[in-house]
Image 1 (cartoon, helix red, strand yellow):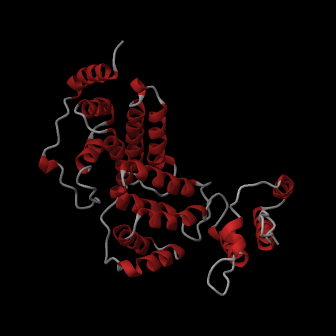
Image 2 (image 1 turned 30 degrees about the vertical axis):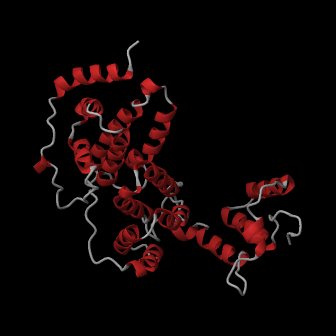
Image 3 (image 1 turned 90 degrees about the vertical axis):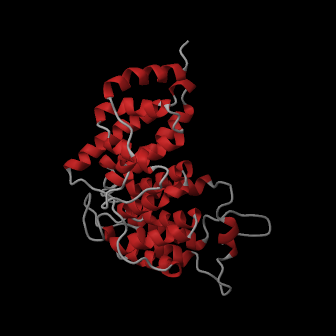
Length: 329
Protein backbone atom coordinates (compact mmCIF):
# COMPACT_ATOMS: atom_id res chain seq x y z
CA UNK A 1 0.00 0.00 0.00
CA UNK A 2 1.28 3.46 -0.87
CA UNK A 3 2.04 5.53 2.21
CA UNK A 4 1.05 9.16 2.61
CA UNK A 5 4.68 10.26 2.27
CA UNK A 6 5.08 8.23 -0.90
CA UNK A 7 1.84 9.66 -2.29
CA UNK A 8 2.88 13.26 -1.54
CA UNK A 9 6.39 12.71 -2.83
CA UNK A 10 5.09 11.23 -6.09
CA UNK A 11 2.48 13.94 -6.47
CA UNK A 12 4.96 16.66 -5.76
CA UNK A 13 7.51 15.20 -8.18
CA UNK A 14 4.98 14.99 -10.99
CA UNK A 15 3.45 18.38 -10.39
CA UNK A 16 6.50 20.45 -9.65
CA UNK A 17 8.19 19.57 -12.90
CA UNK A 18 5.31 21.29 -14.67
CA UNK A 19 5.04 24.30 -12.40
CA UNK A 20 8.64 25.46 -12.38
CA UNK A 21 7.93 27.60 -9.31
CA UNK A 22 11.06 29.31 -7.94
CA UNK A 23 11.66 29.87 -4.25
CA UNK A 24 11.15 33.45 -3.10
CA UNK A 25 14.43 35.29 -2.77
CA UNK A 26 15.05 37.50 0.26
CA UNK A 27 14.41 40.69 -1.68
CA UNK A 28 11.10 39.28 -2.88
CA UNK A 29 9.85 38.79 0.68
CA UNK A 30 9.85 42.54 1.35
CA UNK A 31 6.35 43.70 2.21
CA UNK A 32 4.73 46.23 -0.10
CA UNK A 33 4.28 49.50 1.86
CA UNK A 34 0.52 49.36 1.38
CA UNK A 35 0.21 45.94 3.05
CA UNK A 36 0.12 45.05 6.72
CA UNK A 37 3.28 43.24 7.75
CA UNK A 38 2.69 39.79 9.19
CA UNK A 39 4.73 37.83 11.71
CA UNK A 40 8.23 37.33 10.29
CA UNK A 41 8.00 33.55 10.51
CA UNK A 42 4.90 33.35 8.31
CA UNK A 43 5.36 36.25 5.86
CA UNK A 44 7.31 34.34 3.15
CA UNK A 45 4.80 31.50 3.11
CA UNK A 46 1.82 33.88 2.92
CA UNK A 47 3.44 35.70 0.02
CA UNK A 48 3.95 32.39 -1.75
CA UNK A 49 0.24 31.63 -1.32
CA UNK A 50 -0.70 35.12 -2.53
CA UNK A 51 1.50 35.10 -5.62
CA UNK A 52 1.15 31.55 -6.90
CA UNK A 53 -1.35 31.28 -9.79
CA UNK A 54 -4.36 29.15 -9.01
CA UNK A 55 -3.51 26.51 -11.58
CA UNK A 56 -0.10 25.96 -9.97
CA UNK A 57 -1.21 25.91 -6.34
CA UNK A 58 -1.42 22.12 -5.99
CA UNK A 59 2.22 21.78 -6.96
CA UNK A 60 3.27 24.66 -4.74
CA UNK A 61 1.55 23.21 -1.67
CA UNK A 62 2.88 19.72 -2.39
CA UNK A 63 6.38 21.15 -2.56
CA UNK A 64 6.00 22.88 0.81
CA UNK A 65 4.77 19.63 2.38
CA UNK A 66 7.67 17.73 0.83
CA UNK A 67 10.07 20.28 2.34
CA UNK A 68 8.63 19.60 5.76
CA UNK A 69 6.79 22.88 6.36
CA UNK A 70 4.72 22.24 9.53
CA UNK A 71 1.00 21.73 9.18
CA UNK A 72 0.27 24.62 11.57
CA UNK A 73 2.31 26.97 9.40
CA UNK A 74 0.45 25.92 6.28
CA UNK A 75 -2.88 26.41 8.02
CA UNK A 76 -1.84 29.85 9.28
CA UNK A 77 -0.66 30.94 5.84
CA UNK A 78 -4.03 30.11 4.25
CA UNK A 79 -5.90 31.95 6.99
CA UNK A 80 -3.70 35.05 6.92
CA UNK A 81 -3.67 35.23 3.12
CA UNK A 82 -7.44 35.64 3.33
CA UNK A 83 -7.17 38.17 6.14
CA UNK A 84 -4.78 40.33 4.11
CA UNK A 85 -6.29 39.99 0.65
CA UNK A 86 -10.06 39.55 0.98
CA UNK A 87 -12.38 42.28 2.20
CA UNK A 88 -14.28 41.44 5.40
CA UNK A 89 -17.06 43.77 4.29
CA UNK A 90 -19.50 42.16 4.04
CA UNK A 91 -18.44 39.35 6.37
CA UNK A 92 -19.56 36.49 4.18
CA UNK A 93 -19.66 35.59 0.49
CA UNK A 94 -16.03 35.52 -0.75
CA UNK A 95 -14.81 35.99 2.84
CA UNK A 96 -15.92 32.44 3.59
CA UNK A 97 -12.37 31.49 2.59
CA UNK A 98 -11.39 32.80 6.05
CA UNK A 99 -14.37 31.41 7.92
CA UNK A 100 -13.78 27.84 6.73
CA UNK A 101 -10.19 27.44 7.90
CA UNK A 102 -11.13 26.14 11.33
CA UNK A 103 -13.68 23.76 9.78
CA UNK A 104 -11.00 22.49 7.39
CA UNK A 105 -8.72 21.92 10.37
CA UNK A 106 -11.41 20.00 12.23
CA UNK A 107 -12.03 17.88 9.14
CA UNK A 108 -8.31 17.13 8.92
CA UNK A 109 -8.37 15.82 12.48
CA UNK A 110 -11.21 13.42 11.64
CA UNK A 111 -9.93 12.06 8.34
CA UNK A 112 -7.83 8.90 7.93
CA UNK A 113 -4.11 9.56 8.24
CA UNK A 114 -3.48 9.34 4.49
CA UNK A 115 -6.16 11.95 3.73
CA UNK A 116 -5.57 14.54 6.44
CA UNK A 117 -3.87 17.07 4.19
CA UNK A 118 -6.62 17.16 1.59
CA UNK A 119 -8.58 19.98 3.34
CA UNK A 120 -5.49 22.17 2.99
CA UNK A 121 -5.50 21.74 -0.78
CA UNK A 122 -9.23 22.55 -0.92
CA UNK A 123 -8.76 25.62 1.32
CA UNK A 124 -5.93 26.90 -0.85
CA UNK A 125 -8.02 26.61 -4.01
CA UNK A 126 -10.95 28.22 -2.23
CA UNK A 127 -8.76 31.16 -1.20
CA UNK A 128 -7.52 31.66 -4.76
CA UNK A 129 -11.12 31.80 -6.00
CA UNK A 130 -11.96 34.39 -3.32
CA UNK A 131 -8.81 36.36 -4.09
CA UNK A 132 -9.77 36.57 -7.76
CA UNK A 133 -13.31 37.63 -6.86
CA UNK A 134 -11.98 40.31 -4.51
CA UNK A 135 -9.73 41.71 -7.24
CA UNK A 136 -12.79 42.02 -9.48
CA UNK A 137 -14.68 43.85 -6.73
CA UNK A 138 -12.03 46.42 -5.78
CA UNK A 139 -8.88 44.52 -4.74
CA UNK A 140 -8.95 44.97 -0.96
CA UNK A 141 -5.65 44.93 0.89
CA UNK A 142 -5.32 45.17 4.67
CA UNK A 143 -2.80 47.96 5.14
CA UNK A 144 -0.71 49.14 8.07
CA UNK A 145 -2.55 50.82 10.92
CA UNK A 146 -2.59 54.60 10.48
CA UNK A 147 -2.51 57.36 13.05
CA UNK A 148 -1.46 57.54 16.68
CA UNK A 149 -2.53 54.65 18.85
CA UNK A 150 -4.29 55.32 22.15
CA UNK A 151 -2.34 54.47 25.26
CA UNK A 152 -2.91 51.01 26.77
CA UNK A 153 -4.72 52.65 29.68
CA UNK A 154 -7.20 54.40 27.37
CA UNK A 155 -7.44 51.80 24.61
CA UNK A 156 -10.36 49.88 26.12
CA UNK A 157 -12.61 52.90 26.50
CA UNK A 158 -11.59 54.23 23.09
CA UNK A 159 -12.44 50.90 21.50
CA UNK A 160 -15.86 50.72 23.14
CA UNK A 161 -16.71 54.27 22.08
CA UNK A 162 -15.52 53.68 18.52
CA UNK A 163 -17.58 50.52 18.20
CA UNK A 164 -20.65 52.25 19.62
CA UNK A 165 -20.21 55.09 17.12
CA UNK A 166 -19.38 52.73 14.21
CA UNK A 167 -16.05 54.54 13.68
CA UNK A 168 -13.73 52.24 11.71
CA UNK A 169 -10.52 54.29 11.93
CA UNK A 170 -10.72 54.83 15.70
CA UNK A 171 -11.66 51.23 16.31
CA UNK A 172 -8.76 50.05 14.14
CA UNK A 173 -6.21 52.00 16.17
CA UNK A 174 -7.78 50.98 19.46
CA UNK A 175 -7.83 47.26 18.70
CA UNK A 176 -4.15 47.36 17.76
CA UNK A 177 -3.36 49.02 21.08
CA UNK A 178 -5.41 46.39 22.89
CA UNK A 179 -3.79 43.45 21.10
CA UNK A 180 -0.37 44.80 22.00
CA UNK A 181 -1.21 45.32 25.67
CA UNK A 182 -3.85 42.78 26.73
CA UNK A 183 -4.24 39.01 26.65
CA UNK A 184 -6.28 36.77 24.39
CA UNK A 185 -9.16 36.10 26.78
CA UNK A 186 -9.63 39.80 27.53
CA UNK A 187 -9.70 40.64 23.82
CA UNK A 188 -12.16 38.00 22.72
CA UNK A 189 -14.44 38.76 25.66
CA UNK A 190 -14.88 42.25 24.23
CA UNK A 191 -15.82 40.85 20.82
CA UNK A 192 -18.67 38.48 21.63
CA UNK A 193 -21.28 41.19 22.14
CA UNK A 194 -20.35 42.94 18.90
CA UNK A 195 -20.70 39.65 17.07
CA UNK A 196 -24.26 39.19 18.29
CA UNK A 197 -25.49 42.79 18.21
CA UNK A 198 -26.11 42.96 14.45
CA UNK A 199 -27.87 40.25 12.46
CA UNK A 200 -28.42 42.19 9.26
CA UNK A 201 -26.40 39.62 7.35
CA UNK A 202 -28.00 36.61 9.02
CA UNK A 203 -25.43 35.99 11.72
CA UNK A 204 -22.16 36.13 9.83
CA UNK A 205 -20.70 38.61 12.30
CA UNK A 206 -21.17 36.10 15.11
CA UNK A 207 -19.65 33.43 12.87
CA UNK A 208 -16.66 35.70 12.26
CA UNK A 209 -16.00 36.17 15.98
CA UNK A 210 -16.35 32.47 16.77
CA UNK A 211 -14.08 31.30 13.97
CA UNK A 212 -11.51 34.00 14.70
CA UNK A 213 -11.20 32.71 18.26
CA UNK A 214 -11.10 29.06 17.23
CA UNK A 215 -8.50 29.57 14.49
CA UNK A 216 -6.19 31.74 16.59
CA UNK A 217 -6.23 29.07 19.29
CA UNK A 218 -4.84 26.68 16.66
CA UNK A 219 -2.36 28.84 14.74
CA UNK A 220 -1.21 31.01 17.66
CA UNK A 221 -2.08 34.34 19.25
CA UNK A 222 1.02 35.97 17.70
CA UNK A 223 -1.12 36.26 14.54
CA UNK A 224 -3.84 38.18 16.39
CA UNK A 225 -3.14 41.77 15.33
CA UNK A 226 -4.02 41.59 11.61
CA UNK A 227 -6.76 39.08 12.39
CA UNK A 228 -8.47 41.25 14.99
CA UNK A 229 -8.21 44.28 12.72
CA UNK A 230 -10.02 42.40 9.96
CA UNK A 231 -12.59 41.20 12.47
CA UNK A 232 -13.30 44.76 13.64
CA UNK A 233 -13.79 45.92 10.04
CA UNK A 234 -16.28 43.12 9.52
CA UNK A 235 -18.16 43.89 12.74
CA UNK A 236 -18.52 47.55 11.74
CA UNK A 237 -19.82 46.84 8.26
CA UNK A 238 -23.16 48.45 7.31
CA UNK A 239 -22.86 51.18 9.98
CA UNK A 240 -25.84 52.20 12.06
CA UNK A 241 -28.14 53.34 9.26
CA UNK A 242 -27.75 51.05 6.24
CA UNK A 243 -30.71 48.78 5.67
CA UNK A 244 -29.77 45.20 4.86
CA UNK A 245 -32.39 42.49 4.38
CA UNK A 246 -34.98 45.19 5.19
CA UNK A 247 -33.42 46.01 8.59
CA UNK A 248 -31.36 48.87 9.96
CA UNK A 249 -29.43 48.42 13.18
CA UNK A 250 -32.11 50.16 15.24
CA UNK A 251 -34.74 47.72 13.97
CA UNK A 252 -33.07 44.84 15.79
CA UNK A 253 -33.37 43.76 19.42
CA UNK A 254 -29.83 44.41 20.69
CA UNK A 255 -30.40 47.79 22.35
CA UNK A 256 -33.66 46.62 23.89
CA UNK A 257 -31.97 43.50 25.25
CA UNK A 258 -29.20 45.57 26.83
CA UNK A 259 -31.83 47.48 28.78
CA UNK A 260 -33.50 44.25 29.89
CA UNK A 261 -30.17 42.83 31.05
CA UNK A 262 -29.30 45.95 33.04
CA UNK A 263 -32.66 45.97 34.79
CA UNK A 264 -32.78 42.25 35.48
CA UNK A 265 -29.22 42.01 36.75
CA UNK A 266 -28.87 45.26 38.66
CA UNK A 267 -25.93 45.25 41.03
CA UNK A 268 -26.39 45.60 44.77
CA UNK A 269 -24.84 48.18 47.12
CA UNK A 270 -21.62 46.17 47.20
CA UNK A 271 -21.27 46.49 43.42
CA UNK A 272 -21.88 42.78 42.87
CA UNK A 273 -24.72 41.05 41.05
CA UNK A 274 -27.44 39.53 43.26
CA UNK A 275 -26.58 36.08 44.57
CA UNK A 276 -29.24 34.38 42.48
CA UNK A 277 -27.50 35.58 39.29
CA UNK A 278 -24.00 34.78 40.51
CA UNK A 279 -24.75 31.21 41.51
CA UNK A 280 -28.07 29.98 40.25
CA UNK A 281 -28.88 30.83 36.67
CA UNK A 282 -26.25 28.63 35.01
CA UNK A 283 -26.78 25.59 37.22
CA UNK A 284 -27.88 22.38 35.48
CA UNK A 285 -31.47 21.34 35.57
CA UNK A 286 -34.61 21.64 33.53
CA UNK A 287 -38.18 22.87 33.80
CA UNK A 288 -39.79 21.41 30.68
CA UNK A 289 -43.13 23.10 31.26
CA UNK A 290 -41.53 26.56 31.26
CA UNK A 291 -39.50 25.75 28.15
CA UNK A 292 -42.58 24.52 26.32
CA UNK A 293 -44.52 27.62 27.35
CA UNK A 294 -41.75 29.87 26.11
CA UNK A 295 -41.47 28.03 22.80
CA UNK A 296 -45.20 28.40 22.26
CA UNK A 297 -44.92 32.15 22.86
CA UNK A 298 -41.89 32.44 20.55
CA UNK A 299 -43.89 30.97 17.69
CA UNK A 300 -46.54 33.66 18.07
CA UNK A 301 -44.57 36.81 18.98
CA UNK A 302 -42.38 39.10 16.91
CA UNK A 303 -38.67 39.35 17.93
CA UNK A 304 -39.09 42.47 20.06
CA UNK A 305 -42.07 41.09 21.96
CA UNK A 306 -40.36 37.75 22.47
CA UNK A 307 -37.21 39.36 23.89
CA UNK A 308 -39.36 41.55 26.12
CA UNK A 309 -41.11 38.46 27.45
CA UNK A 310 -37.81 36.73 28.23
CA UNK A 311 -36.47 39.91 29.86
CA UNK A 312 -39.51 40.16 32.09
CA UNK A 313 -39.14 36.54 33.17
CA UNK A 314 -35.49 37.01 33.95
CA UNK A 315 -36.33 40.09 36.00
CA UNK A 316 -38.77 37.99 38.06
CA UNK A 317 -36.25 35.19 38.43
CA UNK A 318 -38.58 32.80 36.65
CA UNK A 319 -35.76 30.83 35.05
CA UNK A 320 -33.66 30.52 38.23
CA UNK A 321 -33.47 26.98 39.55
CA UNK A 322 -34.16 26.06 43.14
CA UNK A 323 -31.30 24.90 45.28
CA UNK A 324 -30.99 23.85 48.90
CA UNK A 325 -30.85 26.94 51.06
CA UNK A 326 -31.76 29.31 48.19
CA UNK A 327 -35.03 30.03 46.43
CA UNK A 328 -35.94 31.60 43.15
CA UNK A 329 -38.28 34.56 43.28
